[in-house]
Amino acid sequence: MGVVGAAVLGLAVAAPAGAVPLFPGGPDIPLPVIPGITEPLPGQPAAPLAPAAPAVAPTAPANFSAPSINPASGETVGVAQPIIIRFGSPVTDHATAERAIAITNSANVPGHFYWFGDKQVRWRPEAFWPAGTDVKVDAGGTVSTFHIGDAIVSTADDNTHQITITRNGEVVKTMPTSMGKGGHETPNGTYIVGERFRDMYMDSSTYGVPVDSPEGYRTYVEYATRISNSGIFVHAAPWSVDAQGSYNASHGCLNVSTEDGKWFFENAQKGDPVVVVNTSGGVLNRGDGLGDWN
Image (cartoon, rainbow, N blue to C red; front, top):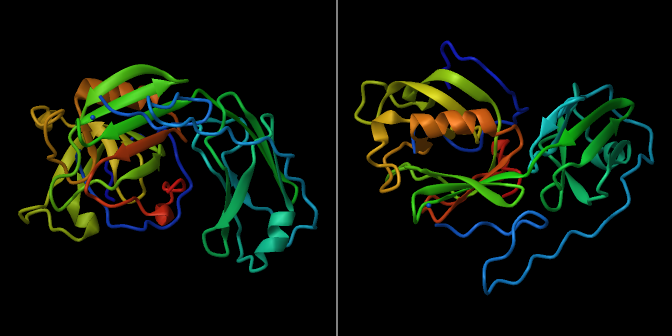
């Protein structure tokens, strides 16, 4: 992705993208049932709460040198944020490495490890973190302590072309949106808020489409919040306001008005989930780097 004059306000550790970038772009909706966050819809069974589990404690010496840990100490992140541990050298004995990593949290929620190659391991809870949880990671003596903030969950429904945003279970905002048009359909799935740009240029040549081709573009965009490493953002798109709430006109992004883009940019936090439903775009690749819940 080409970024010119961008003010970066947050940064997510990323694995290689699993899909080609989709730039730039764009419904009463059933909200996803998230244990402890939203109630089930009428007629739907309640989702069981994740059982409490003892904290993960290290049981073996580390077979790796000091890694980097994301989130970093002192950060406050959203309820979908995974723990990302990156190693300077390949670690081929995954089981021993996992036994050398202690993950404790104040809610005693269970979770699991999963690997992106031999240089990155992740851990996430089985369900979204409960809001207000404190988390400590000790990876062979490298420690990070961070906090889970409010449960800010956004659901974009392609049937209604609306984004509904809840905070701790209460609806706080709805936004008309325009998602990916035919040939650029936005994938379904749970995305994770990553970095934010006050402004940037989106350039189709970064994924092989010449700017001067029929589907090419180089567009100045404001209030861009990344939700996938494959190039999907929630961003202001004043040129598509007529489409927002009615039909899809973007190259995959979630187009919103400038006012709504600014609100999302200012209120969404790293690690918040954005759930896209009812598109014809398949499912976001779990290997995207921000697709851990798919």
